[in-house]
Length: 462
Image (cartoon, rainbow, N blue to C red; front, side, top):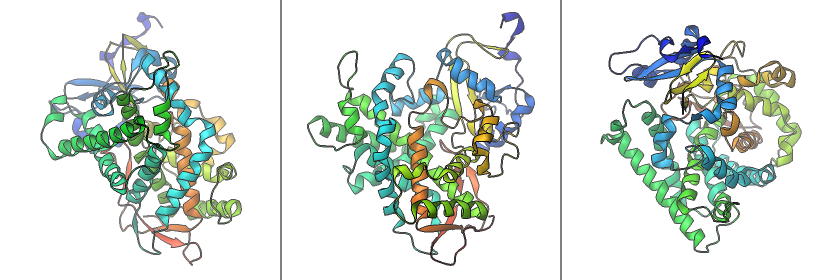
């Protein structure tokens, strides 16, 4: 497209509601999803202000897909990941260009399909241990319970059973503070706010130090000849750059482990929480997926080959990922002058979008807030553009662990369903909290009942 047919970014409409000095920061901290959902009526690209700094929000799925897939080399990851480098270092989530490509090659063996069957046993064992302590009729703070389970799973996958109970507890305690701190650092008008001695910043700094110390200790033991077992850490320690034959630097290993712990814990935990929340609200869907579980597993442990024999469970998982997409904000930054659609952006422009909002766009998903697993029947999938579903990103920066994440949610769900039904026990509405790196349920209480009880599959709408 020629310059004559494009318009400069400064002519893009500005979202209403900006306040003096702080711009749209209060709205982003208070209720970003309603704000994002309202922006499509103003155009495909809308300007927001973080203090005096403009960012440009994309409302069009095709434009987002073009940016992520076709024009990815013209962008870097933007402010959120730049600020994350202070604690995640040079892990896959924060790096770009050739270094990112090289690291991805070194780490890919941990996520190849051939390793997934072995992960199923570890995931299932952690799920079985977690649900063995449940008591009939005693309500569970379900998001918290799933968070502990997911942290145990990712910790075991990375470290095997090498960590002590105190170490596992340290990981569980540190991770939520880091996730919340990541979002605060994104919307702070200036990096000076990160240095303020407020409780949130102190908790964040302490949590980062805790994970750095723990990870560094395990790396040192492995490099000193200690047997760490068959796990992701061992793969990282043995990885060699094919061009130089050199092993990965210890600090780089630490950065990759930090990225996995942060990226692979809360996200899968919250998908599992939202999944059973939806089953508690939708008795007919719950009965159907439980019937499939009985037919395929008959009460026995879930194995890797069983996953492909439960297509309706996969539909439920995929609809959970769509209806409750956890990543509510993604940023990119232009490296040079950049044209997207009919708009020219100068070098250094921050572009943002919300996968959560895209997946709730009625132009792509009719009646988008309705939970409908049949959206994931093959014929329904074929009718939608590929750009309509991006929970793990797209293009060369797509999440390296997407298949493992979906596998974990599926195996945990199947394992729970062999023993328990979960009914809604909250007295108020279950809401959405975005003051973290992911959309988390608030007030989610679920009451476990054994399958042989008279409890019904649904708990009615909260």
